[in-house]
Amino acid sequence: MNIPHIPPGSNWSDFIAMGGQGRYVWSALGIVAAALLIELAQLRLRRSRQLSQQLFRQRDAA
Image (tube, rainbow, N blue to C red):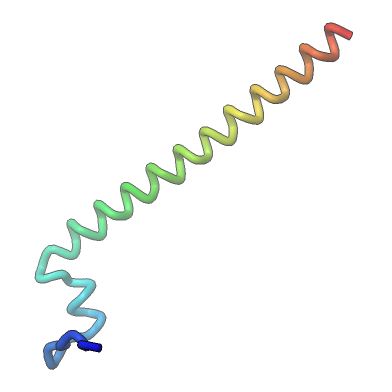
């Protein structure tokens, strides 16, 4: 098994900084994560509204 070489002095702050581009990388990641969470919330809301409308239609038809 070949273990990759980790350069000396590497740590989490170097990883987070991403060579000086960390601000852009992490903000883009945050925006995408927020958009996905908003989309999931909207899908759940839309589904629950449709299910409640179907329930009311079934009650009215009965």
